[in-house]
Image (tube, rainbow, N blue to C red; front, side, top):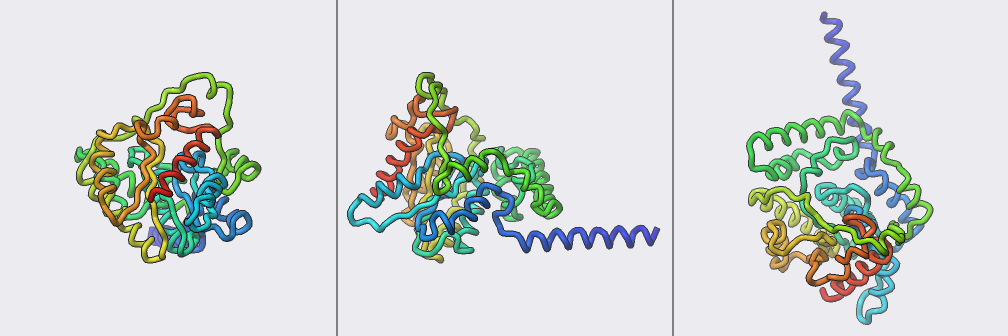
Length: 320
């Protein structure tokens, strides 16, 4: 029995020791295969880039860096822009903040740059238990994840899930992330330009109306909002420390201005003079990008829609 316990302890120590060494050796973005691919391409595609976009597919598919630069650089009195789209699929709010924080700390986004960071509602999908959705988690994220729920049972369930993820990310060592290399990344390597790969315009998107909606937001919780604001200001301090201009970007979410998320988070943030926010999720202000004919599917714009989105984004950016 003692021998069995000794070997069990020895095996566990070696296993977790090797896992810890793997985590120490690999880059912070290792589990996000698309982000990893883009980081590898930046030195050749855009070695002097000074403008970056981090977010989900609503950034990856919608922000055209070449068009952005062309429009910004044609505006007199503005510094020359060379931009790169670091958006990647299935990135949620927590992962976006993680990627932005470490990209600034490790100088992937260099000093004197501008960083657009996608700001979207934190949803229940942010707690999905998969190999990919573990690497950006940390102990301090438990408050943010748990505060999203008011019911005590739901809080306990999500804390258990997050702790399981926190342990699992050390057990798998990130090796399972190789499964995330899919056909989209292969398309990006072949057809992408500076990290941007739009959906093509099809006869369906030209001639058939697509229902636009964003209905994946849970109940508003004041405790959750206060923690989100604290996190956003923390990232703002990191940007300031590294002399980076940080702009929070609300993508084309079809949300009414009276929704809880807009009323209790976005509107107060817009009044904070220390933060810069561009809100593209305003159907009344940008009706053209909310036309169903601009969409490839329920939430993603096709190429023409993405170019329109980029043009309107540049207008809002120059107004800042």
